[in-house]
Amino acid sequence: MKFSTLFLLTSSLLLLTSCDYKDLCYDHSHSAGVIVRFGWQKASGLYAQGMTVLFYDTGKAASPERYDFVGRDGGTAQLLAGDYRAVAYNYDTETILYRGMENSSTLEAYTRRSSIEEGTQMAVLSRGYAMPRAAGTEEEAVILEPDPLCGAQSDAFLLASNESNTITITPQMRTKKVVITINHVPNLQYASQIGGSLSGLAPAVNMTTGELGEGCVTQAFTAASKGDSTIVMTFNIFGHCPHAKGGDYNAHLLTVYAVLADGSKWYYTEDVSDRMHNPSHPGQGDNEVEIDIVVDDLPIPKPIVNGSGFQPTIDGWQGIEIQVDM
Image (cartoon, rainbow, N blue to C red):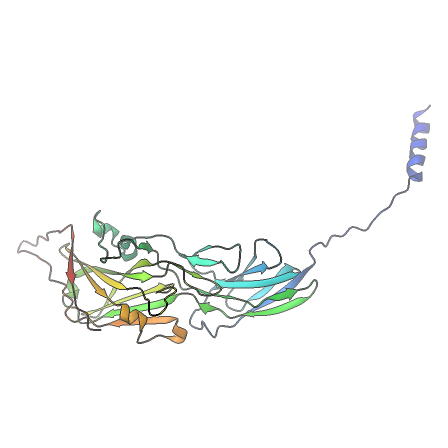
């Protein structure tokens, strides 16, 4: 049989074979648009550069869909149809870490472990000696200061295919600002560096509920002189006294560290619990806590300098107890 004849027979058989063609479906997403808006009435003082929104499909055990929106206005996200809750927080932070992201109810913000030396920026001046801790707080972990943070969870919403929804999320502050002012400090001009630490603080915060994490930590921070005799310390915390019940509050011990021009190192500790628990200036929505501590004659001594200009160095830290006028 010639090749041409075989080819014709084969082609005829193929033509006689029944073929069932179906239209291809290129759209398997069945997605819908979600317009996200933010209401800033509960966090008006935070000017976020952008917001992250995590969309949790409550009917599926799946990782959330993440969208980052520049600015404070929000935007539009494309999602598969489903039942959702959304959690939002500002993404313009450097120190904030997250865990428990697999579920909206367990999403928690925290910061990494730190040290008194790092927080006060006195690592070089400490010269290998561990900086002292307030008595009774030595076992508390020291954490890095959190950046200003807000967060909130939306109401549950149903997203149907080829439809659009609009949701509004109202962020609330998840950090608080603490301002400590110490007045009437003698010999402040002789202090080359000043820092501080505060104990009894919360280690983390739940992003949906604002509930504070278990346990207590210490945070360290820098200080600035204002004028000839005033020290100002400003820093952020997640909160304090988590799950306090029936007046069962944590103690908050403030430690001030000072390095003088002669290299000597001094530290002073005072209990400021009352000011933390009953702030005189709670701020808007209790998102800001101002602790005004008036200290008269804080005993910063004059540095020891002899006639030759030699400045002796004292390697150890010298502690002095001071009385604070509450």
